[in-house]
Image 1: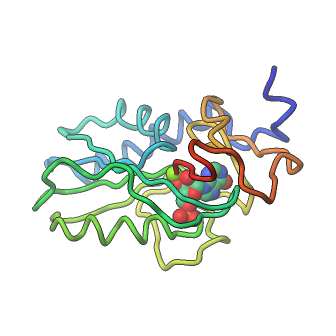
Image 2 (image 1 turned 60 degrees about the vertical axis):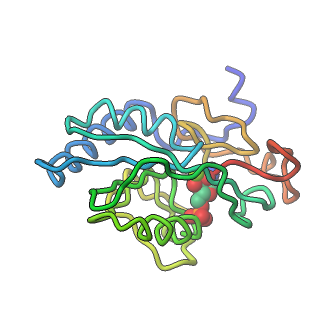
Image 3 (image 1 turned 90 degrees about the horizontal axis):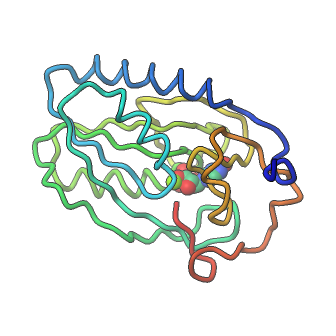
Length: 193
Ligand code: IMP
Ligand code: MG
C-alpha cells in the first residue's frame, strides 16, 4: 500500500468512522425531528464525512456549501479567505454547520458570525473531529464525532498540502512529512480548509 510510506498509524478505522457517523446522524435526526434543515458544509475537507452523514439523515433537508481557504504555513491556520459564499436563503431556518475538524476554532469563529447575519432560527455545529487541546478561539461544536489528541491527521477528507483526502480512514501523518515551511498547495501557499 502506497500510503504506508507516509502514514505513521491509523487513528480511526473505516469501520469506526462508519459506526460513529451513523450514530451522529441518529442524534441529529432526533434533535431536528419535524424541522426542515439546511445543512451548510465547509469545503473541501467535509467531502467524505458529509456524504456519509447525509445518506443516514432521514430528514427533509437542503444542502449548501461555503468555501474557505487559508493562507498559511503547513499545519497552521492562517488568514482565512472565502472562496464560495452561501447561496440558499437561510432566514428563519434551522441550520447545521458541518466541518471536518475543530482545531484552533478560528475557522468556525469566523464562519458563525457570517451565518448569524443571515438570521437563521438556530445554528448547530457538527464536526467529525475535535482537537480541544489546540483551541484558541472560544467555540464549541454541538455534535462531535471523535475527540482526538493534538496530532496532525489526514484521510477521510482531511488533507496535508491537498494530499491524502482519499484515504478511507483517519491516519496520523509521519512527523518527518510535516515540513515547517508552506507546502505547495493549490496556489502558492493557499490551501482549501
Ligand atoms: P481551525 O480554524 O484551527 O479550527 O482549523 C480548522 C481547519 O484546519 C480544518 O477545517 C482543517 O481544514 C484544518 N485542520 C486542522 N487540523 C487539521 C488536521 O489535523 N489535519 C488536517 N487538517 C486540519
Ligand atoms: Mg476544513
